[in-house]
Image (tube, rainbow, N blue to C red):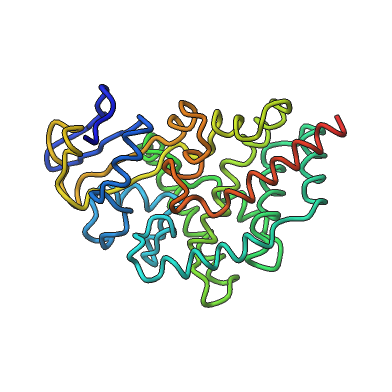
Length: 298
């Protein structure tokens, strides 16, 4: 039986409008993910996705509405572009970082630099490898305004600003990256670093005596990841009524799962190494080196 928890996922269903299932239980996340009944959002063409998915994601760093591009982890493994795109990202991430990068961030943290300064510095460390040049501060600043959750998206001024911000970042990537590079895979990384890095760095500074994996299961940078039903299913009774293929969207609350299980596989994925975040090892090693630098020079 798939359903190992007495607590059923939360389902929000409004006929003809939306059907969203919120899954927080770690075992349920893993079991649904491996059921074969769900897949990544862009397993369906953009035009056929639920209306609210198209509307919402056009204001985020995950989708480029103008060029109809989706971030690599939103692609099905069956998409022929997925594996070459991931391989390119893995190759670039393997370039790693310099010890002077670690020292620079440590110095900024010790001097209580602003979130904006921290974020802009980390953007260069993470993303210079893709551009072979520094990313303009204007682009880093713009990237922070892409929408991060549904609550923001219902506010018209934030939604419109999110769309404009995303297009500005994408335009920069289109004109600055090599022609064969998928611009959204790189552009997303700018937004991700800007929006999540400062919080992660300060959590590290405040928990210098804690193991790295404990810190970042307690404070996982990514709160949730979406999936979409590809088959009608109740997941062996986990749901009271079946999903609707191509219509039902599931949100896996991986940050809650990471905090509950202390499993780093939820910080960077859905509880296994399968398709885990390409930056996982980079992130953990950088934070470990930074923690050591802060300890030595505190």
